[in-house]
Every structure is written in C-alpha cells, then in structure tokens.
Amino acid sequence: MEKPIIRVENVSKLFGRNQKEAVLKLKEGATKAEILKETGVTVALWDVNFEVYPGEVFVIIGLSGSGKSTLVRCFNRLNKPTTGSIYFQDQAIEKLTQKELISYRRDNIAMVFQNFGLMSHRNVISNVEYGLEVKNVGKDLRKQKAMEMIQLVGLSGVENAPISSLSGGMKQRVGLARALANEPEVLLMDEPFSALDPLVKKDMQFELLSIQRKLNKTIIFITHDINEAFKLGDRVAIMRDGKVIQIDTPENMITNPADDYVREFIEGADKSKVMSVRQVMITPSCIVKTSDGANRAIVEMRSNNVSSAYIVNEKMEFKGMLTLDGAIKARDTKGKISDYFSDDVITIEADATIGDAMPLAANAKYPIAVLHNKQLKGIITKASLISTLADN
Image (cartoon, rainbow, N blue to C red; front, side):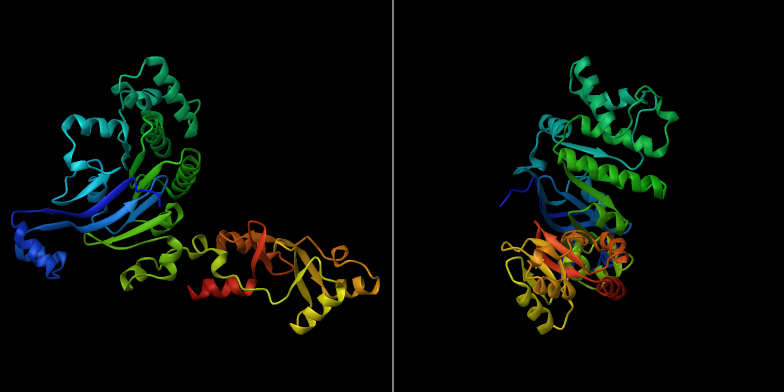
C-alpha cells in the first residue's frame, strides 16, 4: 500500500492554563463548551488522527470553531500541537530544527490564503517569483518558472500588472501561482475561494482541479462549503468541536453518514454532483452475445418479458441494442443479429455522476448503458435517476 505523505497522530491543541484538568475531563467525555466553562481552556483540536496520500485532494470541512483552520496551520507548524505528532514522510514536524523548518516550508509545503497574502508593491510576476527569490534561484530561471505558473493559472498577458488592478479571482490565481512556483509536495489551502463571488468561485474550483490533473499535487483544502468539499475532495473529513467525526469519500459519506450530525451537515449538498451512476444502475434483464443466433435472442427476450436486449461480445464489451423486431428480421432472413442491432445507444462511464447522466437520460430512447473499460456493468433509467434524487 502507498505510504502517506502526511500522517496525523493523536493531535490535540488546547489554549489556556488548566490543560491537565481539561484533558481529564475530555477523556471523561465532557464537551468543548463544558471544558471552557469549567476550566477556562479552549479545545481547538482533540485526538485527531488521519493520513493523507501523495496526489490526493484531502478536504477538511466544518463550521466556524470546528478546528479546521487550527489544524491546517499545524501542518506547517504555524501552530504547534499541545499533544500528538504530525509527520511529513515519516519525519515528525515538531522535531525539526529551525533550519530544517525553514527548508521544509520553502521546499516541501506551501500555503494559499483566503485573503490572498500578496505584496501590493510588487507586480504579478514579481509576486509569483518571490518564493524562488528567497531560495536564491537565479533571475532568469525564476522568471522562466514564474511565467510557466502564470500561464498555468490563466494569467498570461497580465504578468506586469500591478496587484491593485486585479479582481479577487485574479489575485487568488496569483497566490496559487506563487505557491506552485516553489514546486511544493503539499499545498495547503485555507478557504481560498470563500471571499470570491459564486461564478468566480466556480471557475477557481475548476482551475484547481485542472491544475491538480496536470501536476498531481497533494492538496489539503479547508472549506465550510459542503458542495465545494464534495466537488474537490477525493476524501473529506468532517470536523466538529475540534474532533474529526468522519473521513470518507463524498459518495460513501452521502450513503453512509457516521451519525446524525454528519447526515444533517451534508443534507444541503447537491447529491447529483457526488453520487455516481454506479450507485443507481440496475442489472439489465436481457443480455445477448454477438455469437448468439436470432432464435436465441428471441427466446431470451420473451422469457424476460422485454422487447429489446443489450448486446455484448465474449469479453462482455458493450456493442449495442437489439429489438425484438430486429431479432425476428434476422431470423426470417437467416441473417446475423449484428446486422440488425443498433449501436446508436447512449452510454456513460460507471464513475460518472448522476448529474452527468441527467441530460443524457432526457434524450435517451433506451435506458443508458453503464460501462467500465468498455464492459457493460448495468443500465440506468430515467425513473431510477429521478427516484434516487427524490430519496436523497
């Protein structure tokens, strides 16, 4: 199994004087509010454990005060845990010397902030170059690298523009380009799109996913928006009162919430953009192989009380749809069923979302064939799509 790039073990973060008393009460099951009232200690994080894998987009979501921003700042040691450890490639971050910490922040991990964190006295390319400049990269090389990142985030042509002339979305692209220019192994993003208007936010989410596909960076992303979490995250961690309540894929979290809090938290999520067609597909009642004759096809349809069959080859690869009329014509003309089936059938990949399937279903003559590696895995009907969304 692939080794994690980040490992969080028993991490807690407490603020206040009576921390020992607070820890005892936490172990006895006291709530965050009770701890604060009885001891004056604020519980920011309590016994957090998880792993993040290379190339993964790991999203941490929670309401204000849940501890998500405190946690993300532990990854670059802006916050130092009260107890527990965070490991980067098996190296405990809290044990890094000051020199090692500076190197770790320069070379291994970068952060993109909600308020952009740009330097107003520098233009776009100068901001993007800054991290490389700190690393003493030569002028020509850092300019070349900065221009590559500016192009990657869609800002070609504005590299010499002053920061004050940019929109919020453009400023966030500059921040992203600056973080990427250092080629970090882990990118920390603390609610980077929350200050943007909805349309710009949507564009930036798409941009981030596009960049992730090109660069395969490990991203730890903080948000309070469940739709954003489910859109971006390979896995999502839901936090409450400093604790991690559940970690799972968006799809599994929707179908198997850990408790009522998670169920209520994700209630407003757009399920059509998360649930895959794999979850709603059904097994077709009638399948006929290309090597079967017309009589065999007719028998199969009649025995299943249907007027059409899905055609597959010996490898279960989908080839098309044969109607009962087509099978009868093949029998009467002594022809092959391959001469009479239609390959004009709408198909969709098993990992596609229900949202992807909806517009296809609206114009589908037959149920949609669900494929994986060209093999027929199931079918989805308009009724199954509508009932699934209604149930969720």
